[in-house]
Length: 139
Image (cartoon, rainbow, N blue to C red; front, top):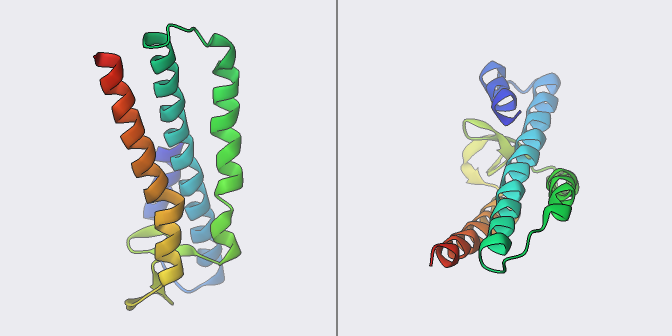
């Protein structure tokens, strides 16, 4: 789904037209949502494999919970940039804006903070923890 969603970026024309702004914000929301789904499924898989290999516990009963958590949690989390009107054109695509008024010389500090707090920070932490878990599994 995220590949289909991101393919719409090529069709989007970055005009100041209201239609394009709405389309860009919609694509940005969907991008954030699907990125979080992929990240949470990865975390759930690593956790499941860790419990199987290290703790010797089979957590099959949690599989439905993994799916529900990975699909529902991002729905709540991806709405946060709408509070500050942070979704918009972010360089070559639509995501959390890092420029004020589409001007590359004026940085949008609130958008940069949201990018790191809502995506890059959790991504770095979860991938680091996943890497540690994989090393523990292999040892």
